[in-house]
Length: 91
Image (cartoon, rainbow, N blue to C red; front, side, top):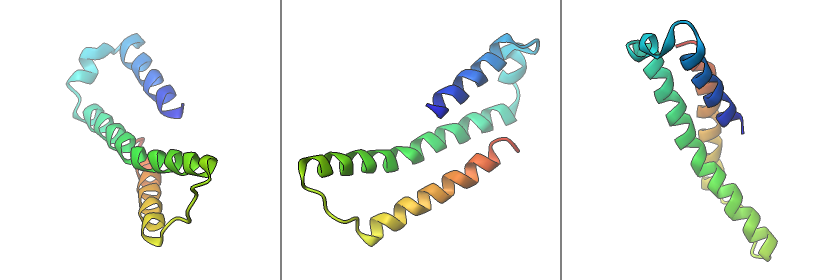
């Protein structure tokens, strides 16, 4: 939900401000931010699918404890996302 809200407000900023899309289309920092948002979405996909798979397994009674390797991988992804959230506004 937050990702969609951020994308929508970014869209409004590009389209409805006095600078318009032409200003942003030729600005490399704008495209860098777009790339960071894409990386953020791709990185969160793994954690989201794991949470959904585990909740389905729990509902079906096939719940198994998370392995240490999987937990560490998910933590690393979350930490990278937290850093990226801080980097996107700076760029």
